[in-house]
Length: 498
Image (tube, rainbow, N blue to C red; front, side, top):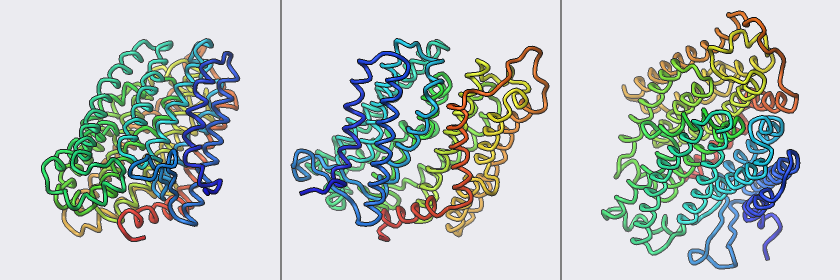
């Protein structure tokens, strides 16, 4: 007989999934938002309880329909996905605190029920990807997340018709990524006769040298690289983030690409294994150059953006390069750095995008040319954005400093000239971040506001949540007990140290 806590894995999926059609049937500004917020908050509470249970008593396995794996679908919660469940549901809940005024400003009232339906489905997909222990079930949830994401981005068309183009571009590229992943899973199924992730992992050593398996690894890694927007597969992300409604951009910036990174980590370390991934296949030789070129080139491209959301979008591609670089180091220390940066970047970037959403709410624009003197016009919102920018740069006492500290430590552990070159690349990228954040600071504080410019802060229901994320980010920059401590535990778990 399962205990109540052992029922939580399926409850974390069923709650948002079953609430989505209810939202579709509702009307008005308040009820769809309130229902979505309640569901997200309850899912967050469940995720925290799962994290505590896994930390105390080890992984939790839930068998759907009572069918034992590998015949049935298994939901498995271990330290890695427990961490991700808390991150996804926590960011979702924080963004929804902000959403009531923001989304009513950007979406027609008759579409709000449909908007929150798509939002709950996206949340369902992300949670399902992380919690399922079945490789094909991952694809199902990946499609739930993706299809709802296309709808959410397209709903930004009320403010800019280019949202439709961005959504269609994301659909095409996202479909290619999902197809690559599905082909890879199909090849693994052909060679193993199972779709259960743990079962595939137990048989992988026997079949790793076969060509269909090598092809499967290639398809899965490329498919996930497209989904996580790794350079040069990132082309869908800047437009998607730029033209989507503000809360969609904020939610996706902290979660969507991180879910794909989670999948990459899961396959590399749980199924393929470190020795095969980095020894036989040589993923380091593929991922490391792409990561380095990605964070250098995208940081440079961000400097020349006039749209603040697009600037932050290119910054996100660069930050994903840091994470992939840490994974490519194929070490316990590198994996620790990757997990630390997943958390820190998610919190910082969500707070920054919420601040940008507040600026759009008040001024109706996010173009730098039209935001002269915004630091005087919206001092609290702008200061929150700048503090988040310090986190991206990596100033001491910010989470970005902690992330880069552990990444540089992991790189130096290579004890080779390559390590020093990578450190130099990281520092150059940080200097480029100083430049693109300074561009916003210069416009905000060193140029006078135009005559008749709008002044005033957004409602407290928007200002407070954005500051909550900024405050949490600084907490993680000062107290690393959870961020670094749990990341080390995850790294040890995945590399066989625990």
